[in-house]
Amino acid sequence: MSGFKIYNESFKQQVVAEVLNGQISKAEARRRYHIAGHCTVLKWIRKFEAQSLQITSMKSDSLTSKEDLFKRIKELERQVEDEKLRSEALALMIDIAEKQLDIEIRKKPGTKQSKR
Image (cartoon, rainbow, N blue to C red):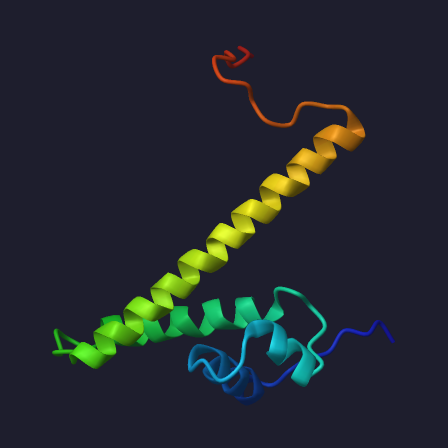
């Protein structure tokens, strides 16, 4: 057995709801529900938010309350923070790779693109 676990949609939605409602963090969800992947909960959040956006966009010009707008702003702020952390992690991984492998991965400013 590979250790790969399949979670049903209702379980994923429950976990996402708990995280988005601020009841638990993504890390707490992983620990509480024994979710192996570090990015699994984040992927679920993105999936369900994308589905939610599709449903929302299908509704025609419905008025949203201030409370709904504040919730949406909080969700977007959380997404921005997640992307900042992801960006920092990728930059750190590149730094480590450049140092350990002794190669330049990042393009230096002013470097011209090679012609084929």
